[in-house]
Length: 424
Image 1 (tube, rainbow, N blue to C red):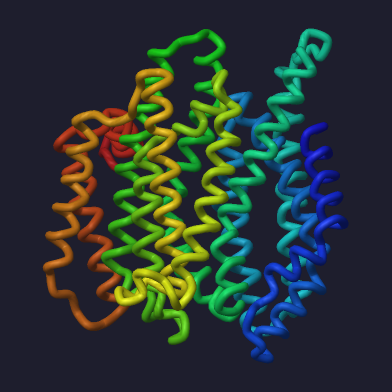
Image 2 (cartoon, one colour; image 1 turned 90 degrees about the vertical axis):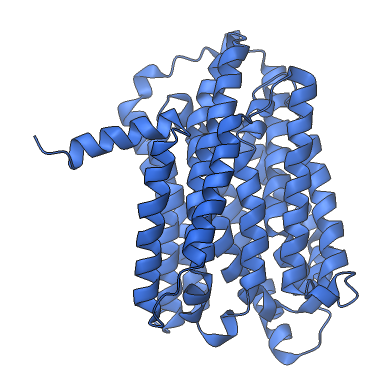
């Protein structure tokens, strides 16, 4: 727990040093009253950032410990299901005026405290007997250096994930951030399988590096790529085929984010297709490069957002400006970032994640999209959503199994079928 404590103190130090400069940087250029009110609200609650940073840091440490004990299920459930589900519930409570904004923020931060408690109990009740680290045998200097690189790299990655929203607030107003955020998270849902697979792969890759088993590393790399592509492709089709009907269910002012969803979804589909490249790098002797790549991504995201958000965007004639420009800039940065890591691993280790199955998966996604997209569905939104989604599963899953694109997914589906659906 030394690393998150150091990280928290570092953030606290930077806060007192650069607070005024940072707030001045993110202050919206517009002088509209509602924008200034939003900014004032941000200033009043800015101190909560440090509590959130502390809770996030400790939760990530506990998650890493749980994964190292080959139990990734609980942290994945807490982060991807519990947190998101409770967050949506809190948003609805705030939307319908059951709780005010300050209460919403306090409850949101309390969710992380709750996750820390749950994960701590899980680890120390079930796995405490497995923790046999002898600190006198650890080269503490190297361990601390590794932790600091991972900490700064992780902080950079976290900042990158929010930078587009900060830039939107600065350049065109915080009102637009709300519209962008909804569309962004719809497109970003494609990352969910990748996060789950990455959490499972991390301890396996660490062990493979420990024994210098490069064949195992390559095998995990390839399997992570094809499985994430197939699962991410299914989610992408579900999102994009239903995008018009889905957005029509939202308030009218949130319905203009179609291009945002497309750009973010495509970039995240590419992201998951490149497999667990970042985890391979961070568990290897090249771990320092993870920080370098994240810093490059940070600069690239800052530059591209500055170029494409403003009205002077070189692609403004294609409506790539404002929130669409932010999504395009973020997507471009993500694609360049992952391409760089792909090339790095190929040069340093001679491995890459793509096989003939990758081509089959891409063809599957395109064919299923064309088949369903050319079918006329009823005008009723709910009926259309259900019918289109049902047809997607009815086509995608059988074709994936038929062409044996992923042995792992086929085996998993076979186990599920035999357990729950096959008659005795």
